[in-house]
Length: 229
Image 1 (tube, rainbow, N blue to C red):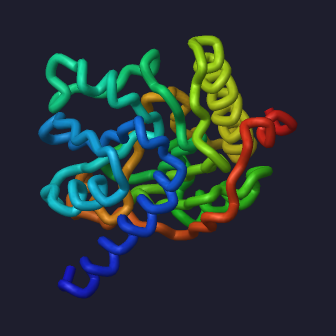
Image 2: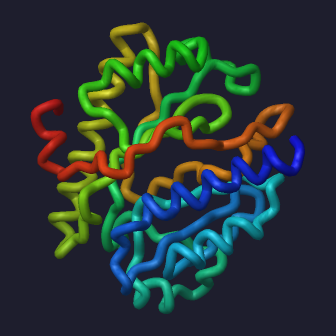
């Protein structure tokens, strides 16, 4: 990949983070995580997240969490450089996610959509349109971002968020099953998803993780999902 192409994909990172963390509460931190090093990079601002991610090795598989943690929680971690927030300690979430993989040689699964084109047909058939569609290299990752981050007052509210997230994943799974396919379940609040502007290095050749569609004004309230669950 030449320098101009790499610059283009890196711009996807900036555009995504500005939308993804737009409504982050000042007292919260987001985590960017490397699969290879198992290292967590805690970020208090969008600029810090962008600077951190830009400086990570492009040969690593890099992820970001849709569940945020309080500054107090992060500061009290025994080894925050190698710690991630457990779902019981997530303080807010940016939205719900879906992960639609396609068949690939390194996966060895035959119940996935056979091509990206078929996967996109599935996405277009879902009852709600994603805020962001990300080409993850071997499929698509979707974010349904909220109008404001869902900040949890107590454990019951946290459980309700995961319940709705799970039901939305199950709804999408049912749509896939009608076509004879399966999708991964990404309902857990501490789920990490790929960060646009990085690379999927799990196959023989690195593939750019990039934004396919993004409409930052298309945001949801948790109640918007209820009628489809």
